[in-house]
Image 1 (cartoon, rainbow, N blue to C red):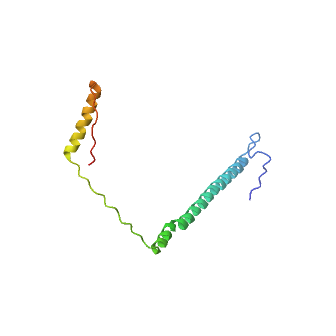
Image 2 (cartoon, rainbow, N blue to C red):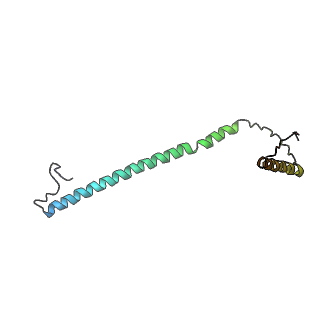
Image 3 (cartoon, rainbow, N blue to C red):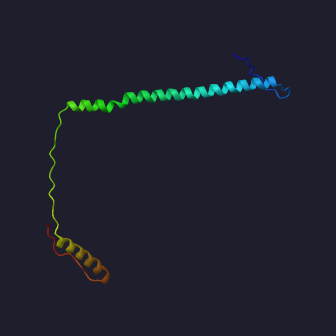
Length: 119
């Protein structure tokens, strides 16, 4: 299309003519368009790859779910957790013992727990 001699500069400023400027602008514009076209071509290729991956791998969980539907469902009975009711008096006794132990450390008194009782 264009005959360019790449061995010499596009615009020779020693003998500047407007015809050389036009050739330089045409050459620069064509390089700009080629660069932009290359960038958008690569972006389109990436977009196509992502679309193909979405189509291929997006349905995979659905396919696995369909395979799992054929398998028998085993139900494991849950163990019932017994609720333990805590007496408010026990909570008060534990808090009072903790306070008494903390105060005995500061005052120099000895405090120790003598017995344990499981509830």
